[in-house]
Length: 258
Image (cartoon, rainbow, N blue to C red; front, side, top):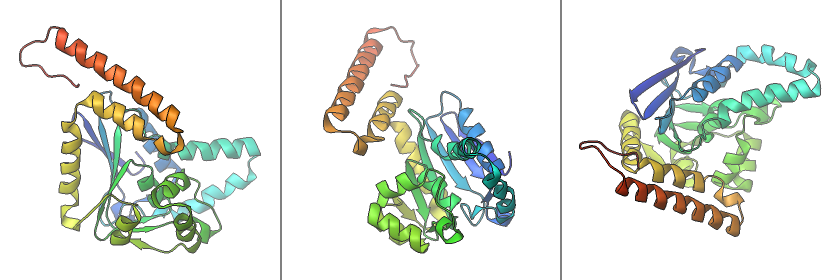
């Protein structure tokens, strides 16, 4: 699918791999269409999605060869241009699906669209050679792939301004200090570290994990009364679900997603 490969190591986990390693996994509108299709088609039992890149880099960003293709966007009327960019953004916003945790496993360069794809995930695990850079402003553009909000939430407005307007590179250690990534490991240990994280997440009952994840997403933007109301409603659903499980018949040897 336009340089995107799907892997299914277990029923609850899907790995979405940017798979053009010889060119450091560049992105095109076709890549974004493939990512959207992959996300829309996730089976109901999937609880964790890992996004990563094959080879030496997570993603080098927009394929320079696609710049000419994108030039035609300026010829579109306002409504068509807005709709087209919105379709590109969906490839980045679609990963925060209800009840599904998304994890970016980042090695090497995550530049521009690559950086924004990593920001699209709930969590980021980085190899010690990871390098992040928001390159769009230096090209006369803006970061328009839904990355500005997550960046500000991760590092604060002032730091986000500095990173975007200078276009400087952020290494893995600094990314951890800034809150861009949650864990940094040696390159050779990246896959194992992500697998350990996935196993820890899957050890939490699925229903509780899904409700908690949905509560935490966007919590910073809600007022206290709204957030507390959502907590009460979620806990009521959990209590009723647990009570139903305990009172209902269960076959020997079966388990629940909880």
